[in-house]
Image (cartoon, rainbow, N blue to C red; front, side):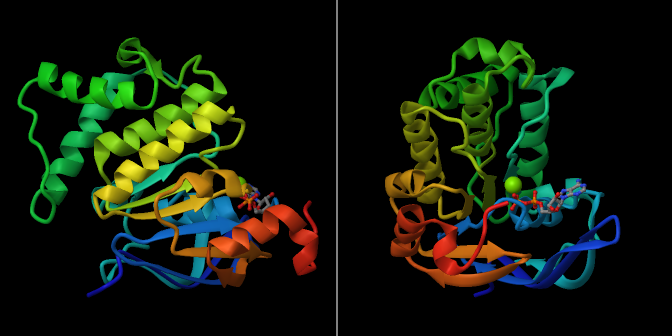
Length: 258
Ligand code: ADP
Ligand code: MG
């Protein structure tokens, strides 16, 4: 059985400067991994490189989804393989209707994954809206969000709730969530964790990038915790590693936060 996501000796540069310097990570079906590490260590770079952001150049190494290399595929093809990225800083896209965007994304993914995953087919816009409304409700967002433009005027908390809501609707096979808990109040952190738990129930692989043990405590499952520094994983462990980091800070590992 091949891993859902396999990152092999990944080297990534931005404008000729190496940011990731040989990162290895393998996410199996149903596994939950947390990635921690000081600011500027390359966590978001990893997430962006997996989705094929044009600014991030893979200079060597490979990224495989179920054994198939994706590094030569455009972002849209990678998304159709069932990879989802929850952004650290979701961008406001005025003019792109939330509901329209999500229905297109869902339909594209549904066509691509229907062979290997049990997925609903929504014949009408109304059926799809009912499905999204249930998910909006589950993360504490009002149905009126469906009528808005993507992320436009959303508060920080609403953006984060909205990212995991999209994840629930799309049902990816691997979700990479870049600081889904940053800037959230306690209730919102719980709501986001509950959404992640619902995705875990589907058997997806999940990567949660975070600075805090709090969100990890709410997860029903946590298989591995990794610390990234200077573009590499320098330490891996279980849940206890996240608790230790929260208690002692990165200085404990001889690392300095930028
Ligand atoms: P983290 O998410 O761990 O805080 P990042 O991956 O965002 O770290 O950043 C790693 C390094 O790469 C930082 O030095 C950052 O300034 C640089 N970097 C990231 N994205 C860009 C970009 N789009 N353009 C220029 N430099 C970038
Ligand atoms: Mg980051």
